[in-house]
Image 1 (cartoon, helix red, strand yellow):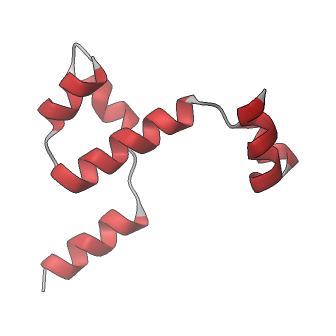
Image 2 (cartoon, helix red, strand yellow; image 1 turned 120 degrees about the horizontal axis):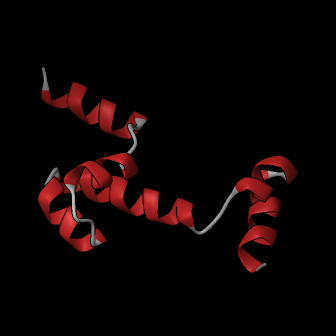
Length: 73
């Protein structure tokens, strides 16, 4: 499909073939978590019944770690 062919061009054959629209959902929820930290709100927006489900979509990132270091000084 269109997403797969674009992903292959950007990520290379192996990684591009494994990429799916599902990755966009993970990215969006992670971004919201980094920006707001409001897991209940993110849970609602994602349509999850449990915040534990939402937490599985949110991934640690280097950007979030650097933000923590900036505020801890």
